[in-house]
Image (cartoon, rainbow, N blue to C red; front, side, top):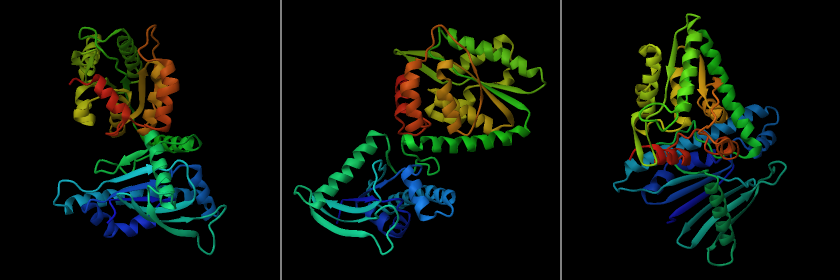
Length: 402
């Protein structure tokens, strides 16, 4: 009869699998909501657990833990869809997944109905799992009274608040992709995470070494100046024109992707998309239209969401590259935005060759990039592609015509 159930555990793989057989979907149908708190799968804590439990093959154990996290998301997503299909009501209970940043080796299962709590805790004491079982106890009580129940309830909610503060608390819906689901990283494990992404991107680049064609992405810049690229955008397009001709001398086929949907700035909407303006400009310079990739690729890979930030640009360009027969991808951009675009490309499985074009009045603030944007990409919002991405929402609200 609990309206909310909380689960704090190391991975919860066995527990979630057991509960999913009939309990989770049935409870969701009856309006119960679940909150599952897990550590970051790339954290030092998980590395330590893996080292303790399988010291003979630490790397394999760490990979196994990472797989368990992905399987949990898959299982929960399946149960949410099952509950929605079973329910005759318009709404069912929700499932939330959050990161427990400050973590002890403990499991807490807790249910609450209004102010009454029941649950149990177990604790595995360091440095290794206890041989004869773990310290466990059942608790119950009212959250308005000074009891273990109240303290445990407050502890769980403090972890939830921290996860929300770090953008690491999500509702599980049909839109969540288990293979790309990630919590905000901690400093101790961010490098491990990005090294993993870089290795995958490096494999992709090696696969593409068999091809001959080359792709150029020209980072767009908004707003347009009376339908024409502004000075900074124009300088990048001029550079791309010269790079195209240089690469063509080797008898290679070269494609140029110019990103960018129709933008608005200060309440004024551009007449054309950035892609259209860039393609038109390069056509006038003499680039064959068949070598230019624009709006049709924005639509193909971003649909109605459009291309409204550097991450969108990198995503579409990476998809063009990975789905095409290109050997290299060149990126022409501002020096100030290069590092962030590098991170986005790595997230999307690509390692480009960068060409920066300086400008006396750059649109991108270097200090903002170094101290806000780049750390946010490294630790929190890695791709700006999720529906609940704060940066995706912000840039679309600012730039997409209403």
